[in-house]
Length: 99
Image (cartoon, rainbow, N blue to C red):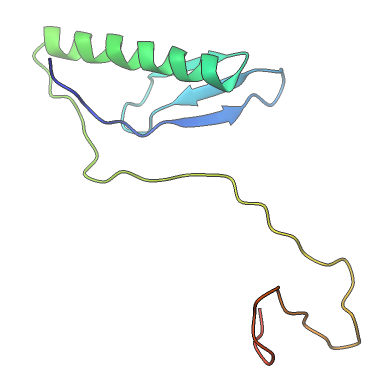
């Protein structure tokens, strides 16, 4: 058994409650599901089937040379500065530092 690594992207469907998953390495290969876990399972199945077809036709299996870590980051920003001209510091940022 051979193993391959693929980056996947899971996005919220804009017009329904589900999720859309795809791999930038395999254009046209995608999956979807009502939950993130269902979308992961769907794209895993789609990638496995896609690779099986590539192997059956003797085509190369594309692989990116790097893996990318993607995650959601939440950033808080004050609605109004404390004083006129104040560029407030983030917690733990030394006095005089600007963000």
